[in-house]
Length: 71
Image 1: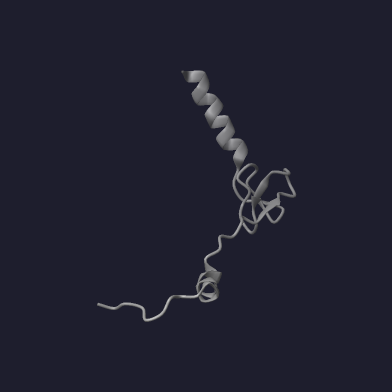
Image 2: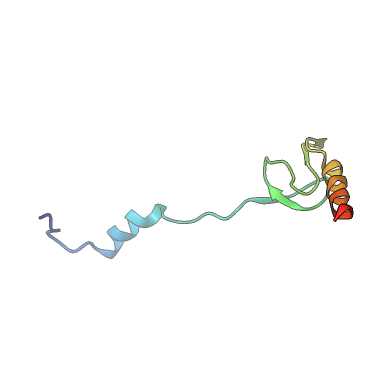
């Protein structure tokens, strides 16, 4: 059975664990609508990326209104 010969010092343990940190999310403000979004991703609120409309959010809003009126 493998057993350590010596106690691991706190500094050695800290060096080993130096890469175990968690990073925060890099959120930026959307230049079109002002909502926070992930950098280099399409905005989930308005559907714009790099000042261009990628996803048409008005169509999905109209469809959800139609479904609500049917019920």
